[in-house]
Length: 160
Ligand code: ZN
View 1 (cartoon, protein in one colour):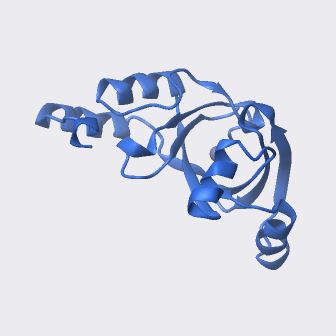
View 2 (tube, helix red, strand yellow; view 1 turned 60 degrees about the horizontal axis):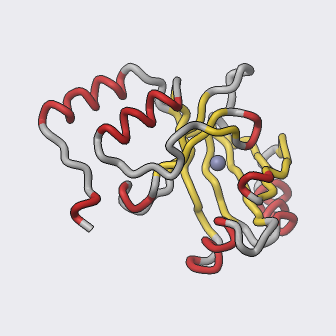
């Protein structure tokens, strides 16, 4: 387990601070794994009143997602379309709940290089196209203290 932890020197900690300062840090969305999208929308959209602004099926991830506005960020509800998909396996193992946190970065490719150079384990070595047609990549939760982090690049309309 400890072999997977990134080694950090004082110098890399300092450059990490400056790298963060140079980048806009915003939680683009919080991904929540749900068994039933309609039931989840009754909570987040109907009962809590978050505006629903998008729904799509992402074939590569075998999920149907719904995006809801939540102030400066969003809630992404994910329902698996295949019992063998990562979201289905997540729910099977851990139950419904918070699945990932998406951080908006200026350049996904650059962030991936930076993270792997520091010893963090990546799920996606290269950016790929995720929901909303933006470039995304996931960082493995085993090297991030159990949090699945999605990096996503700002869309042309200013939102991922
Ligand atoms: Zn996401």
